[in-house]
Length: 252
Image (cartoon, rainbow, N blue to C red; front, side, top):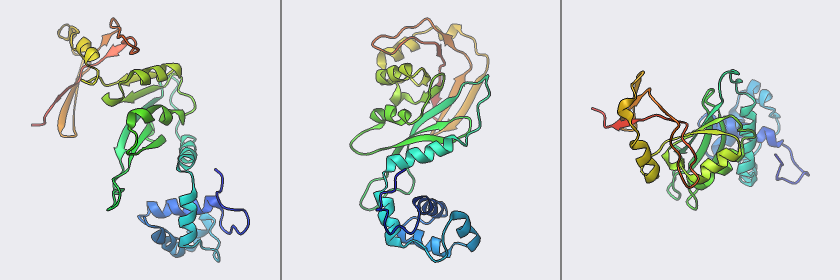
């Protein structure tokens, strides 16, 4: 990614300063002054490994100005691209699966600003975040879905999973154009589809197994039974391939 500083007078390389800041934040140093203190106090062996010159520690002011001048989207894309090269290749017999989910960043709330919300795409096999994008007060997760996955080069044959918020016609069309498969949760935000699925003859389909899990204040029971095909949805939502019922109940 480009260095926003003028070439003349640069004493610390961009990669070195960014790496120092990442290491400091990972160690629990959050403010610019704390990051600068961490760099000064870092052991000599670590400083050499990071490329820090003994007589050229970056100042708090330089760190602050440089980090504030960086394009956050370019920095995120660069970091995610690097992480993507470190993932373990999926076995040929398995499809790649990516989970899309939104989370509020812990510790990001301040007295002057609300907590930051991020939409991320995570490789389900390795747990590595492949892409992320900020969801500010002017937008929402739905409008950031396509820009998020645009950061990932090839989605052909990949299975994308997302919650009920992303069960949208535009999302289905986007994933279809990119050659991806999808698993989406259907709830009341798609009433016609939900009614069609609820009306399937589930009692006639035997359970092969049943999986029960607790979380977010509820117990979810997912029987290992599925309805294959036979249901076509109108207005751009496509044709059902597999459907699995999930029953959520309050924990006892």
